[in-house]
Image (cartoon, rainbow, N blue to C red):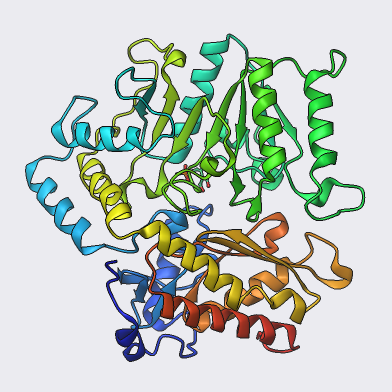
Length: 463
Ligand SMILES: Cc1ncc(COP(=O)(O)O)c(C=O)c1O
């Protein structure tokens, strides 16, 4: 396992020393940014520093402060920042050539073969799955997936789920549940129906883990000839909702939805943009559930180092596109193919998925007990290297813990840990560490998070 800074080095960095943020240089950069950039910027509002450099799991800001990065570029940096082997490979490719349109190249062919081989049931002889290289964002792959499903089925409707997140282009925002971000956008979500996801929130008694209410409701809504929802072109599904607040799909719920999609003749699109590439402990999160997707969207971590790439994987019988039906100037990024190919090798060579299982154990040991310690911690949930701590304010009502989650995030960043908030009203503190993070460092960071939770629960801890 190549971890770039080991635990002994971390001790030299005064990682968890309290600091005042933003530091003077960061403050200047943030002020310039506010003047020059769009108001739609997000992360620097809650992580108030400018980045000078980053290696492995450590970010260094322009004022010399170090942070443990438990966000990993929103799940992009599977092997942390600038993994040395991937840097060398990218540099070599940079010298050779970078942009290849959608022409075949040796480096692309190698990557394609390795990627297809990861698909459960892939048969290279019959070529039963195909890959399409999209424009370089996750949203572009989701957009392409819906386009493919609409053409393949000749239908228009799409089923998406409450709490789902699929991107912020016009089409993908229409598949995303977050109403605040959709506000004021006319015509958004044409043909999209939202159904309840596998969370107990919609159950009359809010009984954790009880999926029966949802599966019965969904079955009724989609099969009722008087139900008002025409047979859809596609059902788009996350196996674990990330931005929605780390909500794990119940196995029975997922299987029911998958079977319904097949029965209705809709394409089952599994959005693995955040959950894929080992994040949940298997290469694809859907592998654990024995479901049979028609289309899989993959992006974020796929190049291993953050060189942008986004793909659709789909069963060959759905290859209904004509030449040019989905193009994109940047779909021939050779740097991403070269580093992605090496990333797939490193996953196996370094048993990164085994390490992800150890990350999961560390979270369960260090953060798992939090709900017993405070009535304001509703839940610590997740899988592999994808975790959320949901907070609730008075009386344990869901979706009320935004101020608490943000306060913990603020305290964490001032103590040298980068996290994210998400879910309803930002009530969930989210962790997406690099898949190869040093385990001692990670355990230390989790202890700092647990202490921050305790401190926030004590009045006056957050200024
Ligand atoms: C599940 C899921 N789908 C799609 C996207 C959109 O990806 P991008 O921001 O690269 O467009 C994201 C981004 O967070 C995501 O988590």
